[in-house]
Image 1 (cartoon, rainbow, N blue to C red):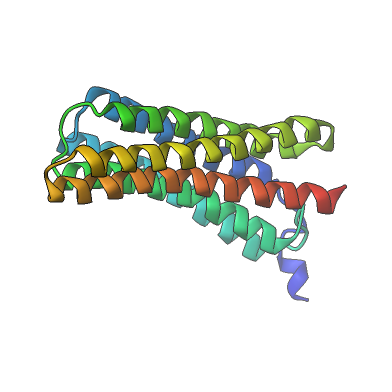
Image 2 (image 1 turned 180 degrees about the vertical axis):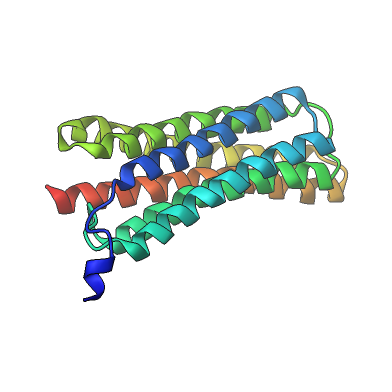
Amino acid sequence: MLFNFMPKEFNFFDLFDKQVDFAVDAASYLKEVVSNGSADGEVLRKIQDIEHYADDAAHSVIDRLNKTFITPFDREDIHALTKEIDDIVDMINTIISRKKVYKLEGVDKDLVKFATVIEESVRAVSRAVKGMRAMKHSKTVFDACVEINRLENVGDEMRDEVLGRLFETSKDPIAVIKWKEIYQDAETVLDICEDVAHVVESILVKQA
């Protein structure tokens, strides 16, 4: 009798689209922040607002998942996809928050490069997630996933290069610690984007 009170089907793709749009907003804002070199309270409030909206979108997916009998793909995949997209926004918020806490003012060209790659990767995540609505878009989805994987490799190389230069040239050990965390967090965003790609690829393979 329980199933009689549960919606038989729901369009989860609308919620995924909303969730990934907030991830794109966060990535675009990160690039704006690091390009301007700002780290004041207003900057922090804006990214926290984006994170709050993204959390609400993630909670909506989980809530609907608990109330819906028929889902477009495996329930554990819906949960995993929702979590990974939400983690993108959380980590971007962490980067901006740490930049303010550590009082890292000014424009750092390496962080700007990272932010550019992050925005490209998150936009590829958006294409992959939004393309899942129809199997006819599977090539677009797989191409986006390939691009996400490529950008993650770019991030690995950037991190190693930047950290190597940081250790060689910086005379301030505290500054080294601060920037090391920031750069590693930036690369972690790209790792999470790759995790999203893996979930999406797994879903498409199961649906094929």
